Length: 150
Image 1: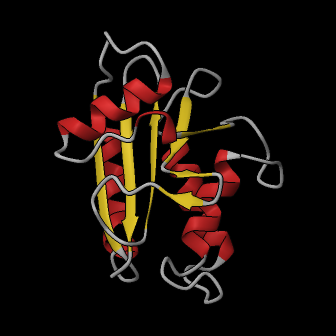
Image 2: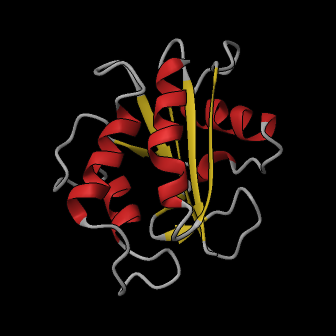
C-alpha cells in the first residue's frame, strides 16, 4: 500500500485546503461482481452509504476531453470549487497531476473508475449536500477519493 501512502502524503492535506477530503485504499470485495456492487461494498466498509446503480462508470483510458473520461472528470472536480463550480480551486495542471496520481494507484488497462455523480446529479455517499466521490479498483486494490463542500 506504499502507493496509497504516497498519494495521501502528497495530496490529502493540499486538497483539504479547499474541501473536506476522505481518501482510503483497500482490497476489493472478491464476491462483488459488477462495478456498482464493488464500489458500494467499499463505501459501506468505510461507513458510507451505498448508492447502487447511481455509480457512474467512467472511462479510465479516455483522454481528458472525451465524454465520461476518468481523467477529465477527476481533473474537473479538483480544478473547480466543489460548492461553486464557477470559482477556480486548483490550477488545472495541478489538478491533472493529482488525477493522474490517483489513477496511477491502479493497474493501467485493467482498472475500473466510478463516480457518485451520475448524469449531472449528486448521489451522496457521506450525507453531504455537495460531494464528489471517485472509487477506482483493479484486481488487487481499491481506492476512494471523496471531496465534500467545507
